[in-house]
Image (cartoon, rainbow, N blue to C red; front, side):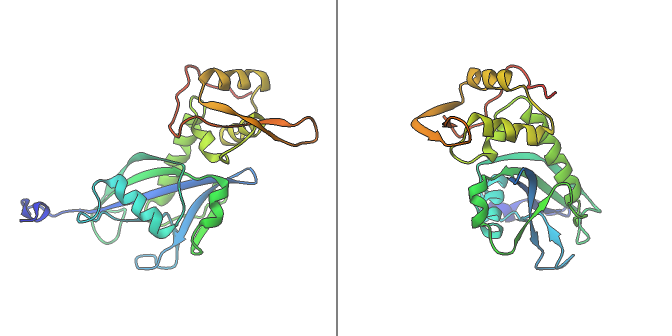
Length: 229
């Protein structure tokens, strides 16, 4: 007997879905990936990529999130983490619902692989989204900005190779503040999560800059927070 169908059905079951806030940087602007809804409710409106949990396919809600991203965005993510759970009787007009929200970051070079139906919308000009998706985006933005001050999170918005100046610029764009160049570089090197690529430099108006890459594709927490000016 199917385990899912064998549980007590005395109590009504809520709708269970996953919604994902995918962020990237385009020309220094933090963008959110939205998709046009194909079905009611709110057919034709922009919303976050999301979908039902498929108990016959998904081993976890993270599996659901990754399946949804493959189907609705078609892009490889560089970082994915669970955000929080949104629930209640009024967030979805169809029924009492639960949504496990995730936050994902994608590198700039992956943007070209987004599905044609996907839209990049600046967090500064985000329209009101259906369901409670606007609140989910706000929560994701707070999470990213908070973690940016004490972790390697913004590095997942960088190309696979980068200079330390480019890394500092991304941190400043996410934190919305300037960082001292010398202390930032010292802090980044101390954390030991990036490594120079031997013999690879990026040409610029001044002398060529050393190219770096992440040592591992995992989040690194700092001992002390970065302090924007």
